[in-house]
Length: 224
Length: 243
Ligand SMILES: Nc1ncnc2c1ncn2[C@@H]1O[C@H](COP(=O)(O)OP(=O)(O)OP(=O)(O)O)[C@@H](O)[C@H]1O
Ligand SMILES: [Mg+2]
Image 1 (spheres, rainbow over the protein chains, first blue to last red):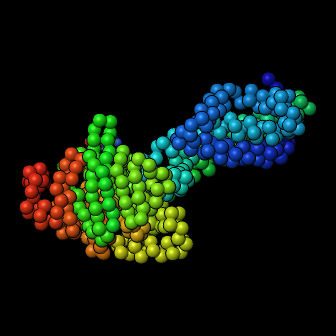
Image 2 (image 1 turned 90 degrees about the vertical axis):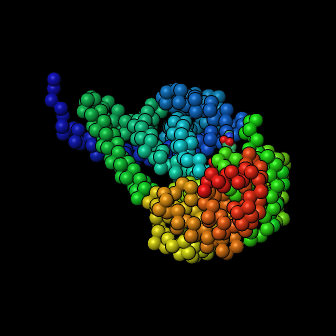
Image 3 (image 1 turned 90 degrees about the horizontal axis):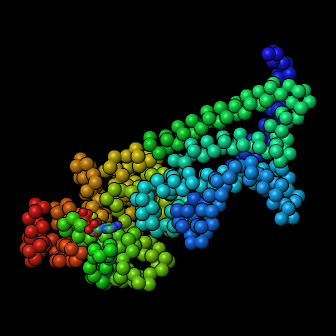
């Protein structure tokens, strides 16, 4: 066994840190889009809009039932062959879309469960004061469901950050892609991938810490 | 003027409301009493379509809602003319005491926020909870929650206030303060239809008492008529049991 090249690793840290904004940026963009889409699908699943409901169920089933990597390849390499409008799509955009669709399917189910968990009397009270269904949902039910779903959604965000590493298979130079290039130059694969692993880990640990703060804050707001 | 004609509600083969006819004058305070499972809650819930009646017509002022043709716009309009006080309070768990009161004023009645808040603060004063303005329901006692539940209903200035056993879920120590508050609401001649097991309270505040059994109005009259000289055997038996 040879010794680790510590100097190489320390030198690599700032290089890969330079790609953290892209990684976080992709995850954030995908998270925002996925949350919006998931909320819409969750609300639809609760309301059971005819026809649309079957479509949403199929969507959720497909995106939960197939690997993210396969979905990314399907969008980036496959879809442009039948839909030429997509041929100009860049890797970052494709990755964001893929992550959005994939995670929105999971998040929709979490949000749906949280909505169904809100006490029936909350619906009735909202209806009784004359709110429309949409107002009841937006102002009373969703905020309460969000509190329940928040920890799970943060978990998905953490998962999403790690999954952005798959974007390198679409030619995106994010943290993983950059590491891959560095390692190919130096042949110090172990050092390079160890550095990127530790950096992902640090990001996730930071988020886990924030997640605990968030949970404490949410619990305080409702049950003082 | 409120008029209810032929209000009927079935669950499967169980006819829970069997063609209720009822008129309530503006400012009238009507108490409903009767054994468990006779449709008292269902009547109230059908009056604002929390439960949809199978048939029957509800008229409040110039609004007419017929169960066989009711549109969602009509149902919304009906709900905006009524206020409901729930047995289990049902305060919005994600809203402070004050926001529970302002919520409908802002989102439903489209009042400016400042006006809604002024109204909420006035009501919080009236119900003796000015110091709980920023508290969430989970931090309040049952009595305090129900006072806010009543405050929320008061704020709506509804043509009809529906109250379904507002004190039944309360620990005995909180019943008095809630009854006191309802007494004050009644004194203002708020039109109200209240289901209650508090016979003494019904006698004090009601202009009229209705005895229901088996989904029908069996007997109605002034508190003195119903409590002191019931005409129907079922009323007499019921009153003997609850006393
Ligand atoms: N959602 C429902 N599905 C089926 N049956 C129902 C439903 N809601 C009420 N019922 C039935 O309707 C009848 C009347 O119920 P309701 O709650 O109106 O009675 P109540 O007079 O308010 O009784 P209580 O004094 O116990 O509150 C009961 O037999 C009840 O089982
Ligand atoms: Mg009842």
